[in-house]
Amino acid sequence: MGTSASSRGTNGSQPLVPAWADDQPGKKLPTPDPQRFRSFRTAFGKAVAGGGNADDLQNALGHFARTATGGSTVGPRRLGNIYVAGGNLVSALSGVAQGIDVPGLDTNQFIGRSLDYFAQVLGQFLAGDTADADRINAAIQEAVASVLDLDAAFDPKLLTEDVIAELLCEFTSQSIFQIIVEEAGGAWDRSDDAKKTADCEAALLDLIRVVVDKALQTKLASGVSQFTQDQLKDFMRQTAVSAWSEWESYQ
Image (cartoon, rainbow, N blue to C red; front, top):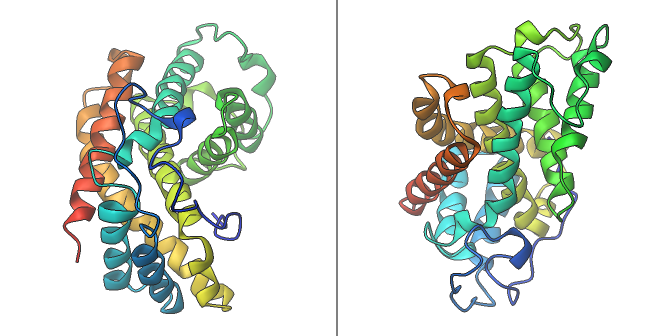
């Protein structure tokens, strides 16, 4: 984690969804409210100052979903590149696990190396060349670190169906987490206590994981390898809509 200091957030006059990230590029976007981040950042600042109090974070997520990002019909469109990367992630991991050649990803280079090295190479491989590249790279590395032991030696047998599903869920959570903490912008300045900031980040990520796992794990229960990349992207899209819809109800 530790992404809270990396961005001052989007300017309210900018489009609700950047063109390079839009999952529905042909669909018209609502006109943005220049003040759409105010309530979210105010509420999030209170959550940061309190070290990640659950009620404060839920209040902030409510403002994030309803006003800052335009609701569940608009906000999830911001994850277009994330959906693509998620489908590619499962395809790459399934190939490595089954010993199938993955163009651009030589499994032999990981033999005898740590999973930390694998996570770094995998993140760079899947990052792509969009403005989301750094976010995708970081989210993949964080996902591997959360699900597997980075100090352990790489072994393709570790990449079971369940582990790949868990990695996709964690990648989705980490990606949404990054977007939220970046859009919080100056709200992170409400606390100069490093522990409170870290506690707030951890509590936020846990809240995101709850809604993502609930929506996505059930879709993957029968095994990820049977699904196409388009199906996986659609599962992630539905998961994001479910998350935004739940957060919209938070007051």
